[in-house]
Length: 136
Image 1 (cartoon, rainbow, N blue to C red):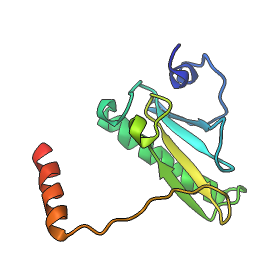
Image 2: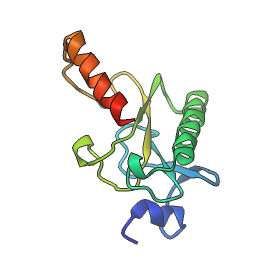
Image 3: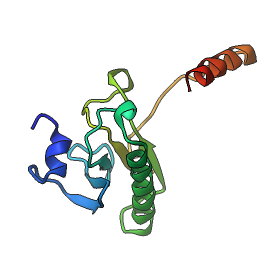
């Protein structure tokens, strides 16, 4: 199989599974950026958000919410949680099966999401909002 996550979902590749239901599966990332790094994937293949069934997307977030609560209630140290989904190469997507990262966070854990915030004029924000609304 070309899709490694498809192989995991099909049981054709090994995974340290944490959660599984009829729509999604969650397992430990084999290249974790922090301790306890999980991936939540839909069982049905979807390359990215545009291909993702809305009910599968909702199931991804529900599972991530449960997993985040479990991490915080368990023995893994976690002062916070980040959820991260990369959609497309420009966004950093490397595995082309939609997936949501669940990242337990602690001070000094080394993971960093960096960006330079901008301060656009309200007129620019209103114009961007109108463009997006028009495409809905």
